Image (cartoon, rainbow, N blue to C red):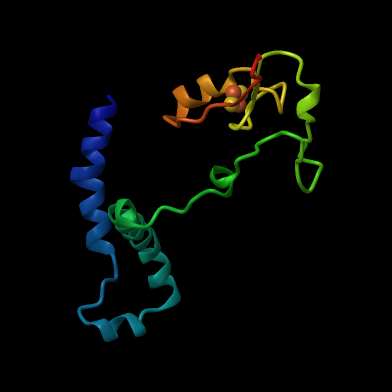
Length: 135
Ligand code: FES
């Protein structure tokens, strides 16, 4: 049923529509078209423009979304700059991992969110590990 309808449109209605179009024989003929003739041409011109755009779209330079260039997606967005200060003397454990991927829910401390981020994006970020020398 659907294919019959599509076939009828392509075989009968489309040729009849194209025959009735007021296509001028010369470029200058477009200047002599009336408003109603232009209106009858609009659907065809729209389809041709869409097909042209879809054809060249793969070759157009990709616009980089602003969101893609952000490193920090949600940490302390209310601040103009995120700065964390930690006194080395205050480090209690032998190893402390600090987040460098900006995805940690315990920022600035790494919660291993970088693993998921790396898996999803193919990135290779990891934490900064501070090791305390035990003498
Ligand atoms: S969670 Fe960000 S580096 Fe580990």
